[in-house]
Image 1 (tube, rainbow, N blue to C red):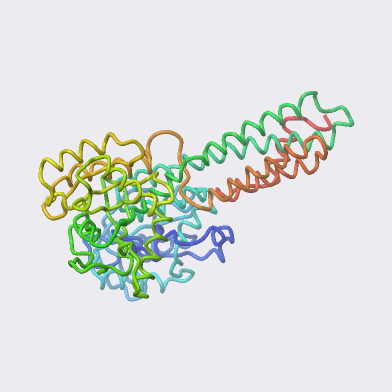
Image 2: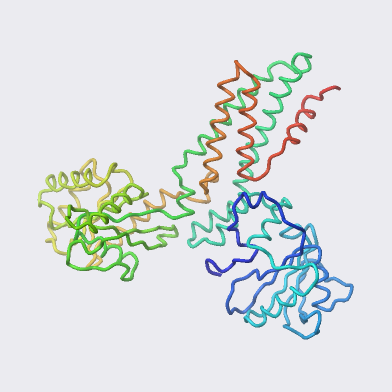
Amino acid sequence: FTKGQCCLTTVSCLFSPALVLAGLADADTIFALSSGHGRCGVAVVRISGSAAATALRCMVGLGNQLPPPRTALLRSITDPHSKEVLDRGLVLWFPAPHSFTGEDSVEFHIHGGPAVITAVLQALGSVPGMRPADAGEFTRRAFHAGKLDLTEVEGLGDLIHAETEAQRRQALRQMSGELGRLYQNWSHRLKRTLAHVEAFIDFSEDELIEEGVLDQVDISVCDLQAEIEQHLKDERRGERLRSGVHVVITGATNAGKSSLLNTLCQRPAAIVSPIAGTTRDVVESALDIGGFPVLLSDTAGLRDSPDLVEQEGVRRARERVQQADLTLLVVDSTILPSEEQEAAALLLEHLRSVLSSQDQCLLVLNKTDLLPEAQREKLNLGLRRVSGLPPVCLISCQTNEGLKDFLTVLQSSVKTMCGDPLSGAPTLTQARHRAHLQHCVAALAQYRRYRNSDLALAAEGVRLALTSLGRITGRVGAEEILDIIFKDFCIGK
């Protein structure tokens, strides 16, 4: 199903972590259409809660019997009051706790016509103790039942909205719990560390604590801080893959920026004309390049102009360049000198006037169809040997010459920025993960800062670090620390 269809379903994960942690308002049995809206071959209606079995019995005519768990049965689905047959479809029974939400759950797989769906939902609404589900409520109940942590919830939401193959792979990996397990491992180590520090504070004077405990804590804190800092040095690969790589097309007027946008989009996304300054605002288009998501932006031509509207367009263009993950600097190749050294000097000067840094930039020399073949070859070979220039691609938006090679270079650059979502350690995918991990690192630094002067403040740093990690997964509790204190030190024995 497509983006935006699942507003009332299990897979609607548009709620914030604050709402998740707020808990359920009540224990009502909830129901909702769990597949996409609109005409379709099969629609899935999901029920979760204590009255799910009652709804199943009264709408399928099973009497006091329930079908075998997780077994699809073909049955007539009837209105519980009028006994009118609403549809004939598959019913499945998922008794607690072996269900997505951890509660008793039922699924009706019915025909996907709007009239059938409406009739079944209205019939369910007439069953006592049942109500329509709020957005994301099935997943919220799964979280509270311990079926998912917050990283898995976010992975589920990302999987639903994945539009490219790489996004699907990353979301599926996060939904499988790999990222959550990494953070849980760090949390477990921090709990042990905090337990040891607090035990030392409380019981060291009674000589109940073995020697070297704080030395072990120092090593653990140092190692963990280094691991988290290394995790943060990911160049935002996971975040880029989740939201899309921001690629900005920039350059002087009439260099062929809008033509390049239209060529890449394979549609007339921007107006193209021989009049300089045609593009005044930012024109955006989402693309799938080699399985990786790209948000492509065409911008106003860079030049000095007395026109106030064009001046604003140029300001926005420069602003977008500063925010870009990758810049495509388009140059009209017909204005370049024939000598490669002079051409390189002109391009370097142009780069300095447009970019604050030459990193993450591709030079796109357009209109090469207007150059003699000898000059094209000379530029192509000569500019590749010039140090200080980013990768250079010679293309013609008019004839598509060089476009295949350019797309190969562009795809390689985008893939490098996003990385392989299936290899190596799981990467950060959310800005909130990064913020909490940065707070965690700062809190661990607090421990090291106060370690020799005030052990209570040092312990508070470890506690704050543990809280920051818990906010990522949604799980942290003081009772777990107490459990480790008594388990590791056998206080009072």
